[in-house]
Length: 311
Image 1 (cartoon, rainbow, N blue to C red):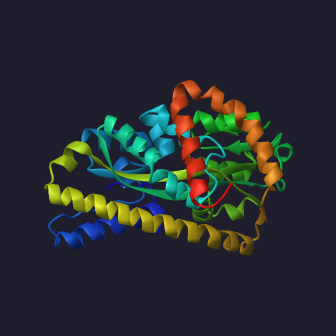
Image 2: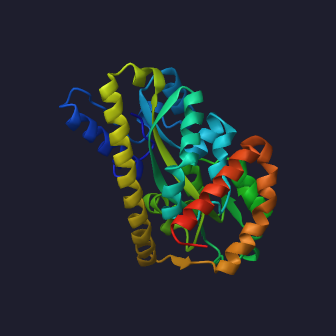
């Protein structure tokens, strides 16, 4: 299994947890070897997806952002800003009809979903000033993940947005080529962004799901009872990973404060302002993502909030 994470990162821990569970329940007959740090794919997301689809590697884990770039734009539904507000809602959404849709989309690409974890919610950092409102972000330059949804979102806020890989991003922030970036807390800490960034905006603007999957031909070649064990252990590991990610997000805030970063939490009124700014974005990408998929996600979020006793 290929994972694009360091050995102690959320993705790698979830993969190893699942692999250990499978080995234990099959008495060591089925072994899954986890390769962290993107080593099987040479650090390239596109290569990783292609190898998984062709059977060059048996299993992998990726974000829906990567699936949107290299499999189908429908996965970008999870990249639309402010659709899913927090960890509790996310869990209910991916364990319901929306999660079934993700499984179907992967199946169409010859891949079988094994478990749906999370890398966290993407936050904003910058070196210039606290960002509380849309006006605060205007005129700044940010590195964003490669999806066109993010590029358009930041431009709608009056910011300049560019894409680049992680190492280029760190250099660009250190030299002032870009003012900031967006990533989950785990990445902010892992890349030691506190050394070149001063401000964090804790706004949970986009969730970063991580889906563990297998090449379908390889998966179906296994004994039926092994397939069932893999699904069960994948789900168990995913639930544990989600709980760990939520706990780690809270701990990260305190750790980043200790590292000298200021944490700004926008008010509910400011979040509403951000959401209104992004409304045209949903129409812009409707034809590529699918109106029915956007509506399904919205309805599933509303259902989750009701079940959680929220308005």
